Length: 516
Image (cartoon, rainbow, N blue to C red; front, side, top):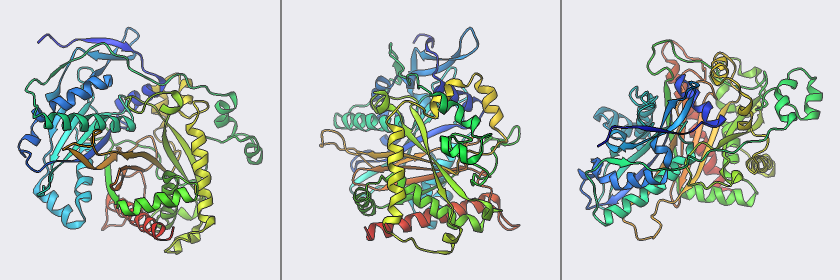
Protein backbone atom coordinates (compact mmCIF):
# COMPACT_ATOMS: atom_id res chain seq x y z
CA UNK A 1 0.00 0.00 0.00
CA UNK A 2 1.38 3.39 -1.02
CA UNK A 3 1.60 6.18 1.52
CA UNK A 4 -1.53 8.29 1.90
CA UNK A 5 -1.45 11.40 -0.29
CA UNK A 6 -3.88 14.24 -0.98
CA UNK A 7 -4.82 16.22 -4.05
CA UNK A 8 -6.54 19.63 -3.77
CA UNK A 9 -9.95 19.62 -5.46
CA UNK A 10 -11.52 23.06 -4.94
CA UNK A 11 -12.06 25.87 -2.48
CA UNK A 12 -15.21 25.77 -0.33
CA UNK A 13 -18.29 27.83 -1.19
CA UNK A 14 -19.35 30.50 1.33
CA UNK A 15 -21.98 28.10 2.74
CA UNK A 16 -19.32 25.43 3.19
CA UNK A 17 -16.78 27.87 4.64
CA UNK A 18 -19.27 28.89 7.33
CA UNK A 19 -19.62 25.27 8.45
CA UNK A 20 -15.82 24.78 8.37
CA UNK A 21 -15.12 27.78 10.60
CA UNK A 22 -17.99 26.90 12.94
CA UNK A 23 -16.57 23.37 13.25
CA UNK A 24 -12.99 24.36 13.98
CA UNK A 25 -14.08 26.97 16.52
CA UNK A 26 -15.93 24.10 18.21
CA UNK A 27 -19.29 25.83 18.00
CA UNK A 28 -21.06 22.92 16.27
CA UNK A 29 -19.92 19.39 15.65
CA UNK A 30 -21.64 16.68 13.62
CA UNK A 31 -24.89 15.77 11.92
CA UNK A 32 -26.28 12.29 12.60
CA UNK A 33 -28.72 10.40 10.37
CA UNK A 34 -29.46 6.88 11.56
CA UNK A 35 -31.78 3.96 10.95
CA UNK A 36 -32.93 0.71 12.53
CA UNK A 37 -32.15 -1.97 9.94
CA UNK A 38 -33.97 -5.31 9.88
CA UNK A 39 -31.75 -8.18 8.76
CA UNK A 40 -33.02 -11.73 8.14
CA UNK A 41 -33.56 -13.73 11.31
CA UNK A 42 -31.01 -16.30 10.16
CA UNK A 43 -28.29 -13.65 9.92
CA UNK A 44 -25.31 -14.35 12.11
CA UNK A 45 -25.50 -11.82 14.95
CA UNK A 46 -21.73 -11.80 15.32
CA UNK A 47 -21.33 -10.93 11.62
CA UNK A 48 -23.68 -7.95 12.00
CA UNK A 49 -21.15 -6.42 14.41
CA UNK A 50 -18.14 -6.88 12.11
CA UNK A 51 -16.82 -4.31 9.63
CA UNK A 52 -16.32 -7.03 6.97
CA UNK A 53 -20.10 -7.37 6.62
CA UNK A 54 -20.46 -3.69 5.77
CA UNK A 55 -17.43 -3.17 3.50
CA UNK A 56 -19.21 -3.91 0.16
CA UNK A 57 -22.03 -1.46 1.01
CA UNK A 58 -19.67 1.21 2.38
CA UNK A 59 -17.55 0.86 -0.76
CA UNK A 60 -20.64 1.65 -2.84
CA UNK A 61 -21.22 4.76 -0.70
CA UNK A 62 -17.62 5.91 -1.28
CA UNK A 63 -18.01 5.42 -5.03
CA UNK A 64 -21.28 7.35 -5.05
CA UNK A 65 -20.33 10.23 -2.74
CA UNK A 66 -16.93 11.90 -3.34
CA UNK A 67 -17.21 14.00 -0.16
CA UNK A 68 -16.62 10.81 1.88
CA UNK A 69 -13.01 10.84 0.62
CA UNK A 70 -12.39 14.52 1.38
CA UNK A 71 -10.03 16.05 3.90
CA UNK A 72 -9.25 19.71 4.60
CA UNK A 73 -5.85 21.17 3.76
CA UNK A 74 -4.32 24.63 3.69
CA UNK A 75 -3.32 26.31 0.43
CA UNK A 76 -0.55 28.81 -0.08
CA UNK A 77 -2.86 31.57 1.22
CA UNK A 78 -3.38 29.50 4.39
CA UNK A 79 -7.07 29.03 3.56
CA UNK A 80 -8.87 25.71 3.91
CA UNK A 81 -9.35 23.78 0.67
CA UNK A 82 -11.06 20.48 -0.02
CA UNK A 83 -8.54 17.77 -0.94
CA UNK A 84 -9.13 14.18 -1.99
CA UNK A 85 -7.36 11.45 -0.04
CA UNK A 86 -5.65 8.87 -2.26
CA UNK A 87 -7.35 6.09 -0.31
CA UNK A 88 -9.70 5.55 2.63
CA UNK A 89 -9.28 2.84 5.26
CA UNK A 90 -12.81 1.81 6.24
CA UNK A 91 -11.61 0.43 9.57
CA UNK A 92 -11.08 4.05 10.64
CA UNK A 93 -14.71 4.90 9.81
CA UNK A 94 -16.49 1.98 11.47
CA UNK A 95 -17.28 1.60 15.16
CA UNK A 96 -19.22 -0.93 17.23
CA UNK A 97 -21.18 0.98 19.86
CA UNK A 98 -21.22 -0.26 23.41
CA UNK A 99 -24.03 0.73 25.77
CA UNK A 100 -23.85 -0.20 29.43
CA UNK A 101 -26.50 -2.50 30.88
CA UNK A 102 -27.43 0.23 33.39
CA UNK A 103 -28.18 2.68 30.57
CA UNK A 104 -30.20 0.10 28.68
CA UNK A 105 -32.19 -0.98 31.73
CA UNK A 106 -32.91 2.51 33.09
CA UNK A 107 -34.10 3.91 29.77
CA UNK A 108 -36.16 0.95 28.66
CA UNK A 109 -37.86 0.94 32.05
CA UNK A 110 -38.46 4.71 31.90
CA UNK A 111 -40.06 4.85 28.50
CA UNK A 112 -39.07 2.91 25.41
CA UNK A 113 -36.40 2.18 22.87
CA UNK A 114 -36.63 5.84 21.84
CA UNK A 115 -35.37 6.85 25.29
CA UNK A 116 -32.43 4.48 24.95
CA UNK A 117 -31.52 5.83 21.52
CA UNK A 118 -31.76 9.40 22.81
CA UNK A 119 -28.92 8.52 25.20
CA UNK A 120 -27.03 6.94 22.28
CA UNK A 121 -27.36 10.17 20.28
CA UNK A 122 -26.15 12.18 23.24
CA UNK A 123 -23.13 9.91 23.45
CA UNK A 124 -22.34 10.45 19.78
CA UNK A 125 -22.79 14.23 20.09
CA UNK A 126 -20.61 14.48 23.20
CA UNK A 127 -17.94 11.87 22.41
CA UNK A 128 -14.63 13.76 22.63
CA UNK A 129 -12.99 11.33 20.17
CA UNK A 130 -15.70 11.89 17.59
CA UNK A 131 -17.12 15.30 18.29
CA UNK A 132 -14.95 17.52 16.13
CA UNK A 133 -13.02 15.04 13.96
CA UNK A 134 -9.76 16.73 14.96
CA UNK A 135 -7.82 14.76 12.34
CA UNK A 136 -9.72 16.22 9.39
CA UNK A 137 -6.46 17.15 7.68
CA UNK A 138 -5.62 13.43 7.37
CA UNK A 139 -8.92 11.61 7.82
CA UNK A 140 -12.32 12.32 6.19
CA UNK A 141 -14.75 13.52 8.87
CA UNK A 142 -17.35 10.76 9.07
CA UNK A 143 -18.04 7.50 10.90
CA UNK A 144 -20.54 4.66 10.80
CA UNK A 145 -21.61 3.27 14.19
CA UNK A 146 -23.39 -0.03 14.68
CA UNK A 147 -25.44 -1.10 17.73
CA UNK A 148 -27.19 -4.52 17.64
CA UNK A 149 -30.65 -4.27 19.25
CA UNK A 150 -33.07 -6.91 20.51
CA UNK A 151 -33.93 -9.46 17.84
CA UNK A 152 -37.12 -11.34 17.17
CA UNK A 153 -38.08 -14.52 15.39
CA UNK A 154 -38.69 -12.44 12.27
CA UNK A 155 -35.50 -10.36 12.08
CA UNK A 156 -32.26 -9.16 13.59
CA UNK A 157 -32.51 -5.45 14.33
CA UNK A 158 -29.41 -3.23 14.14
CA UNK A 159 -29.13 0.52 14.79
CA UNK A 160 -26.76 2.02 12.19
CA UNK A 161 -25.80 5.68 12.40
CA UNK A 162 -23.95 7.87 9.92
CA UNK A 163 -22.21 10.66 11.81
CA UNK A 164 -20.45 13.33 9.75
CA UNK A 165 -18.99 16.80 9.89
CA UNK A 166 -21.41 19.43 8.58
CA UNK A 167 -18.74 20.95 6.31
CA UNK A 168 -18.90 17.72 4.28
CA UNK A 169 -22.65 17.42 3.97
CA UNK A 170 -26.11 18.53 5.10
CA UNK A 171 -29.03 16.52 6.47
CA UNK A 172 -30.35 15.34 3.11
CA UNK A 173 -26.90 13.92 2.41
CA UNK A 174 -27.40 11.53 5.30
CA UNK A 175 -30.62 10.31 3.70
CA UNK A 176 -28.77 9.70 0.42
CA UNK A 177 -26.05 7.78 2.28
CA UNK A 178 -28.58 5.44 3.89
CA UNK A 179 -30.34 4.84 0.54
CA UNK A 180 -27.06 3.58 -0.91
CA UNK A 181 -26.09 1.71 2.26
CA UNK A 182 -29.44 -0.12 2.29
CA UNK A 183 -29.15 -1.16 -1.35
CA UNK A 184 -25.54 -2.24 -0.87
CA UNK A 185 -26.25 -4.28 2.26
CA UNK A 186 -29.20 -5.99 0.63
CA UNK A 187 -27.20 -6.92 -2.47
CA UNK A 188 -24.16 -8.16 -0.55
CA UNK A 189 -26.19 -10.25 1.91
CA UNK A 190 -28.25 -11.84 -0.86
CA UNK A 191 -25.04 -12.68 -2.69
CA UNK A 192 -23.40 -13.68 0.62
CA UNK A 193 -20.57 -11.28 -0.16
CA UNK A 194 -18.20 -9.89 2.43
CA UNK A 195 -14.73 -8.42 2.16
CA UNK A 196 -11.58 -8.41 4.24
CA UNK A 197 -9.99 -5.58 2.25
CA UNK A 198 -10.83 -2.35 4.04
CA UNK A 199 -8.88 -0.02 1.73
CA UNK A 200 -10.82 2.01 -0.83
CA UNK A 201 -8.79 3.58 -3.64
CA UNK A 202 -10.29 6.91 -4.67
CA UNK A 203 -10.60 8.26 -8.21
CA UNK A 204 -11.04 11.61 -9.93
CA UNK A 205 -14.46 13.04 -9.08
CA UNK A 206 -16.27 16.35 -8.86
CA UNK A 207 -17.36 17.93 -5.59
CA UNK A 208 -20.70 19.57 -6.34
CA UNK A 209 -21.45 22.80 -4.46
CA UNK A 210 -24.01 25.57 -4.51
CA UNK A 211 -23.84 27.99 -7.43
CA UNK A 212 -23.71 31.74 -6.82
CA UNK A 213 -26.77 32.89 -4.85
CA UNK A 214 -27.89 36.33 -6.07
CA UNK A 215 -28.74 38.96 -3.47
CA UNK A 216 -30.77 42.10 -4.24
CA UNK A 217 -29.74 45.45 -2.76
CA UNK A 218 -32.95 45.62 -0.74
CA UNK A 219 -32.38 42.19 0.80
CA UNK A 220 -28.76 43.01 1.52
CA UNK A 221 -29.51 46.32 3.23
CA UNK A 222 -32.68 45.28 5.06
CA UNK A 223 -30.95 44.00 8.21
CA UNK A 224 -29.04 47.26 8.60
CA UNK A 225 -31.73 49.74 7.57
CA UNK A 226 -34.39 48.01 9.67
CA UNK A 227 -32.52 48.98 12.81
CA UNK A 228 -32.74 52.71 12.14
CA UNK A 229 -36.01 53.35 10.30
CA UNK A 230 -39.26 53.90 12.23
CA UNK A 231 -41.08 50.62 12.69
CA UNK A 232 -44.08 51.63 10.56
CA UNK A 233 -41.75 52.55 7.68
CA UNK A 234 -39.70 49.37 8.06
CA UNK A 235 -42.89 47.32 7.82
CA UNK A 236 -44.12 49.28 4.81
CA UNK A 237 -40.83 48.70 2.99
CA UNK A 238 -40.61 45.07 4.05
CA UNK A 239 -37.39 45.61 6.01
CA UNK A 240 -36.43 43.64 9.10
CA UNK A 241 -33.73 44.42 11.69
CA UNK A 242 -32.25 40.95 11.09
CA UNK A 243 -33.09 38.33 8.49
CA UNK A 244 -35.22 36.28 10.88
CA UNK A 245 -37.29 39.29 11.97
CA UNK A 246 -36.45 38.75 15.66
CA UNK A 247 -36.78 41.76 17.96
CA UNK A 248 -36.67 42.49 21.68
CA UNK A 249 -40.04 40.76 22.11
CA UNK A 250 -38.85 37.45 20.60
CA UNK A 251 -38.08 34.61 22.99
CA UNK A 252 -34.66 33.23 21.99
CA UNK A 253 -33.36 31.54 25.13
CA UNK A 254 -29.97 32.58 26.48
CA UNK A 255 -27.34 34.56 24.64
CA UNK A 256 -24.96 32.48 22.55
CA UNK A 257 -22.11 30.93 24.53
CA UNK A 258 -19.46 28.21 24.61
CA UNK A 259 -18.12 26.28 27.58
CA UNK A 260 -15.21 27.43 29.64
CA UNK A 261 -11.74 27.02 28.15
CA UNK A 262 -10.69 23.38 28.29
CA UNK A 263 -14.20 22.03 28.86
CA UNK A 264 -14.89 18.76 27.05
CA UNK A 265 -17.00 18.96 25.06
CA UNK A 266 -17.14 22.77 24.77
CA UNK A 267 -20.76 22.48 23.59
CA UNK A 268 -22.63 19.83 25.60
CA UNK A 269 -25.71 18.43 23.90
CA UNK A 270 -28.91 16.92 25.30
CA UNK A 271 -31.37 14.94 23.16
CA UNK A 272 -34.95 13.71 23.52
CA UNK A 273 -36.71 11.47 21.00
CA UNK A 274 -40.42 11.22 20.15
CA UNK A 275 -42.08 8.76 17.75
CA UNK A 276 -45.47 9.37 16.13
CA UNK A 277 -47.21 6.16 15.07
CA UNK A 278 -47.74 5.64 11.35
CA UNK A 279 -51.53 5.54 11.77
CA UNK A 280 -51.53 8.99 13.34
CA UNK A 281 -49.10 10.28 10.71
CA UNK A 282 -51.26 9.00 7.84
CA UNK A 283 -54.31 10.82 9.21
CA UNK A 284 -52.29 14.00 9.83
CA UNK A 285 -50.98 14.04 6.24
CA UNK A 286 -54.53 13.62 4.96
CA UNK A 287 -55.65 16.57 7.09
CA UNK A 288 -52.78 18.68 5.74
CA UNK A 289 -53.75 17.92 2.15
CA UNK A 290 -57.38 18.78 2.90
CA UNK A 291 -56.37 22.18 4.29
CA UNK A 292 -53.67 22.99 1.70
CA UNK A 293 -50.89 22.78 4.27
CA UNK A 294 -47.59 20.99 4.77
CA UNK A 295 -46.55 18.84 7.70
CA UNK A 296 -43.50 21.00 8.48
CA UNK A 297 -45.62 24.13 8.93
CA UNK A 298 -48.14 22.20 11.03
CA UNK A 299 -45.38 20.99 13.34
CA UNK A 300 -44.04 24.53 13.71
CA UNK A 301 -47.51 25.83 14.58
CA UNK A 302 -48.02 23.16 17.22
CA UNK A 303 -44.55 23.64 18.68
CA UNK A 304 -45.30 27.36 19.04
CA UNK A 305 -48.45 26.50 20.98
CA UNK A 306 -46.63 23.97 23.15
CA UNK A 307 -43.78 26.37 23.88
CA UNK A 308 -46.26 29.15 24.74
CA UNK A 309 -47.94 26.81 27.18
CA UNK A 310 -44.84 25.56 29.01
CA UNK A 311 -42.34 28.42 28.90
CA UNK A 312 -44.28 30.67 31.31
CA UNK A 313 -43.79 28.07 34.03
CA UNK A 314 -40.03 27.85 33.64
CA UNK A 315 -38.56 30.84 31.82
CA UNK A 316 -37.79 34.13 33.62
CA UNK A 317 -39.70 37.16 32.32
CA UNK A 318 -41.60 35.20 29.63
CA UNK A 319 -44.59 37.47 30.24
CA UNK A 320 -42.57 40.26 28.61
CA UNK A 321 -42.17 38.32 25.36
CA UNK A 322 -44.55 38.86 22.47
CA UNK A 323 -43.54 36.37 19.78
CA UNK A 324 -41.71 33.19 18.83
CA UNK A 325 -39.82 32.56 15.58
CA UNK A 326 -39.10 29.25 13.89
CA UNK A 327 -36.07 28.88 11.64
CA UNK A 328 -36.95 26.13 9.19
CA UNK A 329 -34.11 24.61 7.18
CA UNK A 330 -34.86 23.84 3.56
CA UNK A 331 -33.13 22.15 0.67
CA UNK A 332 -31.81 24.31 -2.20
CA UNK A 333 -31.00 21.36 -4.48
CA UNK A 334 -34.20 21.52 -6.52
CA UNK A 335 -33.87 25.27 -7.10
CA UNK A 336 -30.23 24.72 -8.15
CA UNK A 337 -31.10 21.81 -10.46
CA UNK A 338 -29.18 19.31 -8.31
CA UNK A 339 -30.35 15.80 -7.43
CA UNK A 340 -31.25 14.93 -3.84
CA UNK A 341 -28.81 12.03 -4.23
CA UNK A 342 -25.85 14.42 -4.39
CA UNK A 343 -23.95 14.87 -1.12
CA UNK A 344 -22.85 18.35 -0.05
CA UNK A 345 -24.00 21.52 1.73
CA UNK A 346 -27.18 22.88 0.09
CA UNK A 347 -29.29 24.20 2.97
CA UNK A 348 -30.84 27.58 3.70
CA UNK A 349 -33.55 28.77 6.10
CA UNK A 350 -37.05 30.24 6.15
CA UNK A 351 -38.43 32.15 9.15
CA UNK A 352 -41.98 32.28 10.51
CA UNK A 353 -43.19 34.42 13.41
CA UNK A 354 -45.88 33.36 15.91
CA UNK A 355 -47.55 35.85 18.20
CA UNK A 356 -47.70 34.68 21.81
CA UNK A 357 -51.18 34.40 23.26
CA UNK A 358 -50.31 34.39 26.94
CA UNK A 359 -53.79 33.16 27.85
CA UNK A 360 -53.31 30.09 25.65
CA UNK A 361 -50.98 28.69 28.29
CA UNK A 362 -53.99 28.32 30.57
CA UNK A 363 -55.78 26.04 28.11
CA UNK A 364 -55.11 22.33 27.82
CA UNK A 365 -56.56 21.71 24.36
CA UNK A 366 -56.55 23.26 20.90
CA UNK A 367 -59.54 24.31 18.84
CA UNK A 368 -59.38 22.81 15.35
CA UNK A 369 -61.19 25.02 12.87
CA UNK A 370 -60.48 27.18 9.82
CA UNK A 371 -58.87 29.77 12.09
CA UNK A 372 -56.38 27.12 13.20
CA UNK A 373 -55.49 25.97 9.68
CA UNK A 374 -55.28 29.39 7.99
CA UNK A 375 -51.84 30.39 9.36
CA UNK A 376 -50.52 26.85 8.78
CA UNK A 377 -51.54 27.03 5.13
CA UNK A 378 -50.07 30.51 4.75
CA UNK A 379 -46.76 29.46 6.30
CA UNK A 380 -46.68 26.48 3.94
CA UNK A 381 -47.11 28.73 0.89
CA UNK A 382 -44.54 31.25 2.15
CA UNK A 383 -42.01 28.49 2.64
CA UNK A 384 -42.74 27.07 -0.81
CA UNK A 385 -41.81 30.46 -2.28
CA UNK A 386 -38.57 30.52 -0.29
CA UNK A 387 -37.57 27.06 -1.50
CA UNK A 388 -38.33 27.74 -5.18
CA UNK A 389 -35.57 30.28 -5.83
CA UNK A 390 -31.86 30.86 -5.33
CA UNK A 391 -32.43 34.62 -5.06
CA UNK A 392 -32.37 36.49 -1.73
CA UNK A 393 -31.72 33.59 0.63
CA UNK A 394 -30.09 33.82 4.06
CA UNK A 395 -27.37 31.51 2.75
CA UNK A 396 -26.72 33.95 -0.09
CA UNK A 397 -25.82 36.63 2.45
CA UNK A 398 -22.71 34.59 3.29
CA UNK A 399 -21.23 35.84 0.01
CA UNK A 400 -20.76 39.18 1.77
CA UNK A 401 -18.88 37.84 4.79
CA UNK A 402 -15.26 38.87 4.28
CA UNK A 403 -13.80 37.16 7.36
CA UNK A 404 -15.69 34.12 8.65
CA UNK A 405 -13.49 33.74 11.72
CA UNK A 406 -14.17 37.26 12.96
CA UNK A 407 -17.84 37.04 12.03
CA UNK A 408 -18.32 33.75 13.88
CA UNK A 409 -16.37 34.92 16.92
CA UNK A 410 -18.46 38.08 17.07
CA UNK A 411 -21.68 36.09 17.45
CA UNK A 412 -20.72 34.62 20.82
CA UNK A 413 -22.39 36.68 23.55
CA UNK A 414 -25.08 38.03 21.22
CA UNK A 415 -28.81 37.22 21.21
CA UNK A 416 -29.95 34.26 19.13
CA UNK A 417 -31.98 35.01 16.00
CA UNK A 418 -34.88 32.55 16.45
CA UNK A 419 -36.71 30.45 19.05
CA UNK A 420 -36.05 27.02 17.54
CA UNK A 421 -34.86 25.34 14.38
CA UNK A 422 -37.03 22.90 12.44
CA UNK A 423 -35.48 20.46 9.95
CA UNK A 424 -37.61 17.90 8.14
CA UNK A 425 -35.85 15.28 6.00
CA UNK A 426 -39.23 14.03 4.74
CA UNK A 427 -39.99 10.34 4.10
CA UNK A 428 -37.43 7.55 3.64
CA UNK A 429 -38.32 4.44 1.63
CA UNK A 430 -36.98 1.63 3.78
CA UNK A 431 -37.39 -1.13 1.20
CA UNK A 432 -34.80 -1.99 -1.48
CA UNK A 433 -35.72 -0.79 -4.95
CA UNK A 434 -36.40 -4.18 -6.55
CA UNK A 435 -39.00 -5.04 -3.91
CA UNK A 436 -37.46 -8.45 -3.23
CA UNK A 437 -34.92 -7.38 -0.64
CA UNK A 438 -34.02 -9.22 2.53
CA UNK A 439 -32.80 -6.08 4.37
CA UNK A 440 -35.16 -3.24 5.28
CA UNK A 441 -35.12 -0.04 7.33
CA UNK A 442 -38.02 0.12 9.78
CA UNK A 443 -37.29 3.50 11.36
CA UNK A 444 -35.13 6.57 10.69
CA UNK A 445 -33.66 9.26 12.98
CA UNK A 446 -32.13 12.69 12.35
CA UNK A 447 -30.19 14.45 15.10
CA UNK A 448 -28.11 17.61 15.38
CA UNK A 449 -25.82 18.77 18.19
CA UNK A 450 -26.45 21.85 20.31
CA UNK A 451 -26.03 25.16 18.50
CA UNK A 452 -23.60 27.42 20.30
CA UNK A 453 -24.21 30.12 17.67
CA UNK A 454 -27.74 29.25 16.66
CA UNK A 455 -31.21 28.61 17.96
CA UNK A 456 -31.64 27.45 21.58
CA UNK A 457 -33.08 24.08 20.50
CA UNK A 458 -34.03 22.19 17.39
CA UNK A 459 -36.65 19.72 16.22
CA UNK A 460 -35.33 17.30 13.60
CA UNK A 461 -37.88 15.09 11.86
CA UNK A 462 -37.84 12.20 9.44
CA UNK A 463 -40.36 9.45 8.67
CA UNK A 464 -40.20 6.05 7.05
CA UNK A 465 -42.59 5.10 4.27
CA UNK A 466 -45.30 3.06 5.95
CA UNK A 467 -43.64 3.65 9.33
CA UNK A 468 -43.35 6.16 12.14
CA UNK A 469 -42.47 9.83 12.14
CA UNK A 470 -39.53 10.44 14.50
CA UNK A 471 -38.67 13.80 16.08
CA UNK A 472 -35.28 14.24 17.73
CA UNK A 473 -35.10 17.42 19.79
CA UNK A 474 -31.58 18.52 20.62
CA UNK A 475 -30.12 21.52 22.41
CA UNK A 476 -27.00 22.93 23.99
CA UNK A 477 -27.42 22.46 27.72
CA UNK A 478 -27.99 25.91 29.19
CA UNK A 479 -29.18 27.48 25.92
CA UNK A 480 -32.89 27.32 26.82
CA UNK A 481 -32.17 29.12 30.08
CA UNK A 482 -35.02 27.90 32.27
CA UNK A 483 -35.21 28.53 36.00
CA UNK A 484 -34.31 25.78 38.44
CA UNK A 485 -34.15 25.36 42.18
CA UNK A 486 -31.65 23.87 44.61
CA UNK A 487 -33.08 20.39 44.10
CA UNK A 488 -32.99 20.52 40.29
CA UNK A 489 -30.11 21.09 37.88
CA UNK A 490 -30.35 23.36 34.85
CA UNK A 491 -30.08 20.30 32.62
CA UNK A 492 -32.92 18.50 34.44
CA UNK A 493 -35.14 21.59 34.24
CA UNK A 494 -34.52 21.92 30.51
CA UNK A 495 -35.22 18.24 29.96
CA UNK A 496 -38.53 18.59 31.79
CA UNK A 497 -39.48 21.50 29.54
CA UNK A 498 -38.57 19.68 26.31
CA UNK A 499 -40.29 16.46 27.40
CA UNK A 500 -43.44 18.42 28.25
CA UNK A 501 -43.36 20.16 24.85
CA UNK A 502 -42.91 16.83 23.04
CA UNK A 503 -45.63 15.19 25.14
CA UNK A 504 -48.13 17.92 24.24
CA UNK A 505 -47.00 17.91 20.61
CA UNK A 506 -47.82 14.19 20.41
CA UNK A 507 -51.18 14.73 22.10
CA UNK A 508 -52.10 17.59 19.75
CA UNK A 509 -51.18 15.48 16.71
CA UNK A 510 -53.38 12.66 17.99
CA UNK A 511 -56.27 15.10 18.46
CA UNK A 512 -55.82 16.41 14.92
CA UNK A 513 -55.67 12.89 13.54
CA UNK A 514 -58.98 12.03 15.21
CA UNK A 515 -60.83 15.20 14.20
CA UNK A 516 -59.67 15.78 10.66
